[in-house]
Every structure is written in structure tokens, then in C-alpha cells.
Image 1 (tube, rainbow, N blue to C red):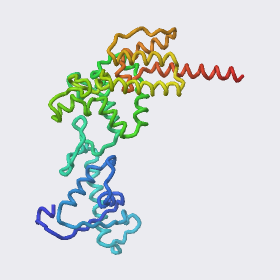
Image 2 (image 1 turned 180 degrees about the vertical axis):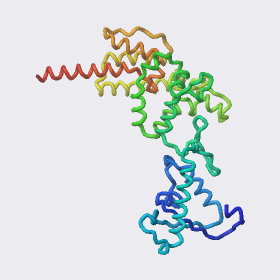
Image 3 (image 1 turned 30 degrees about the vertical axis):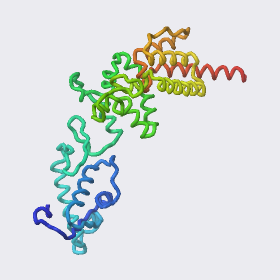
Image 4 (image 1 turned 120 degrees about the vertical axis):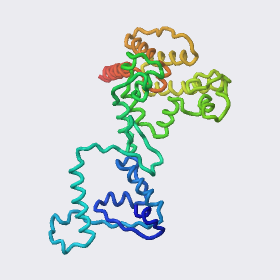
Length: 327
């Protein structure tokens, strides 16, 4: 305000703060963390400070000195001004504490995140996750009111009943334990927002959407997996071989292994589903549930909870057999 009012072109300005954290937030050369609750204000202040031709300095002042010392004649001007400011701040707070204080757009913000017309003052992953998943008041025609589950249900055409079969906690745990780079790749691949033909054409990087391997139009992330080109089939076989080895290493139920690989091969080649030949009722039920959820969903981590139940029973049986042998 002083700069605009008086058209200052040089000089220096010293301000006092009794909050060490606020002092560091404003004056530090290190960037504040995006999860810091007042990230937007801190960045706005810093950018304002850096864009005007005035040198800024700061001074820390011990707060509430008048709590233990009432002899104001012993205090310097900084302490007296700080006491006066605290009084005004307390009066202002009492007048306005019952009022809502929405986050407002800052002049110097380069990027803002909004949810339901509310601007986030910072970017906290867990807070953002909770806001998205805890939405209420869904309107079918307004996708901005949908939760993530609503989005995937619609996108992958998953029946309502099958949504309850999915092991969401296992998916959340797997994503949380993945490196940040892997999480970004999974997000881009599962939503189709990566360098496939459809997106390259949509973003004007090329004039067509063809698959570079087989020439099929409208290449999507799903097509990348289902492509029938020779080199893609070989990559699929290599990937399946690695999964087979992992299943063996983790002592996965052999019948479950067979069922999963049968269904994946049928899905990849767009072949009709054949019966799963097994006497295990739980396995048949598990496969039926995954059929409803979808096997493309399986590859993206949306698996039925029945698979976990099967493995729990399988491991119990292995433990019992070992104890019998050792006993």
C-alpha cells in the first residue's frame, strides 16, 4: 500500500513479528511446504515482497511482555507497538470469531485447487482425499458432486452390487505404499491421461489416434494391454511369467492362480469366458464376483475381497499341514 500510494522506487522497510514461525515463513529463502495450512498467504506475501523495489528486513519481538511487566517506561517502541497490536487483534477476534472465514483467491497465486466452490489454502493429500471420498448430496447429472467411487463405477460400468465386493482398503494400502512416481503413473494410466493415440490426437500432438504397433484406431491404455501385435503379445507373456513366479514365491493357491490366468487370457484376447473347473465353492464365488467387477479393473487393483479370504484359508491350511508334519 505504501509503495502504491507514494510510488516508492527504493528504500528499506523493517517490520516486527512476535511469532517466530511466521517470521521464518515470510523471510526464509526456502520454499514453504505445500501442505502448510497458510501456504497461499505465505506465497502471496513473499511474491509481493519480491516484486516491489524496497528492501525488507524483520525483527523478532518477545510477545506478551506486559503479562509480567507493567512498567511501560522500560519498554522500547517495538515492544509498545507489539502490545498495542495484540490488543487490537484480540478485539478484532472477539468481534468476528463467529463469522465464517472462507479462503479467498490471492493476487499472486499461480495455481489454486478448488473443491465444491471452496478454495484450498494448501495442498494436503490426505485432506484432499477425504474431501473427495466424503462427498454427500450426489447429483446424477453433475459429475462434480460424485465421489471417486462414483467416477469409477460409471467409467468402468461396474454394477452397484459389485462395488461392495471390491477390496478398497487393499487398493488404498497398495497405492499408499507405492513410490510417488508409481502413483502418478498409475493415476495417468488408469484414467487414460497419458501418451496414447487418443490423447495425443486430442492434445494436437498428432493428427491421428492410431496404435503405432497394430494400426488400430483410437488407441487407449486398455488397448495398449490388449493389442494383438507380435511384440505386444511377447511383452504380455513376459509380464504373465513374472506374475506366475511371484505367485509361486508367495505360495498362492494353485487353483486361484489357474483361475486368474485363465480369465486374464480370455479378457486380453476378447474371448468368451469358459467355466472355471474347480470343486472349491469359495473360488467359484470369488471368480463370479471378479467377473462382475471386471478383469480390466483387476489389473488396476480393483479386486474382490473373496481373493483375500481364499488366501487366508489357504495359508491356514499350509500352516496346519506343516504343524502336523513337524508334530
